[in-house]
Length: 185
Image (cartoon, rainbow, N blue to C red; front, side):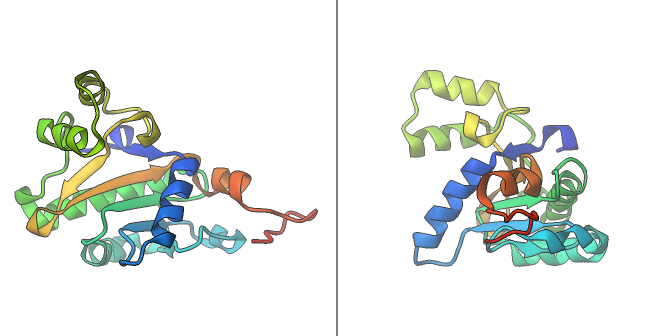
């Protein structure tokens, strides 16, 4: 079972790359970004993110599980991604497991089949495969770690991440501001 400590983090640079790829593809996006900030959402947001205030998660999590079931990657974030974002990601994973049952099952560590699939898809060597299998946990996706993977209806796999550093880190890297600190983009 996943815990806040075992949730996987995605650096803002990786999310930016994913967003660039998604924007150039013609099929519907396989990426969902869920912003769980409350009143602090007024300071700006990541383009294409969905705002689901943390104060509404009690009744919105089952809805999210249903509406995001076709997404390959789901990234949660709040302002710093220290409490609300990770908490929402964990609640999402647990609700997804509860609704779909054992057929889905959250990744509990070294999923040999998942690692072998990743090796086949990315053409990684035996050494890298062992690194991935042995290093799941505290690493970020950019470092080659697995994710909070789950399988949904029809065996569709879904990866769940928390944006490392939250919106604050994203804003530092990607949002231009004027002298008074107001976001320009």
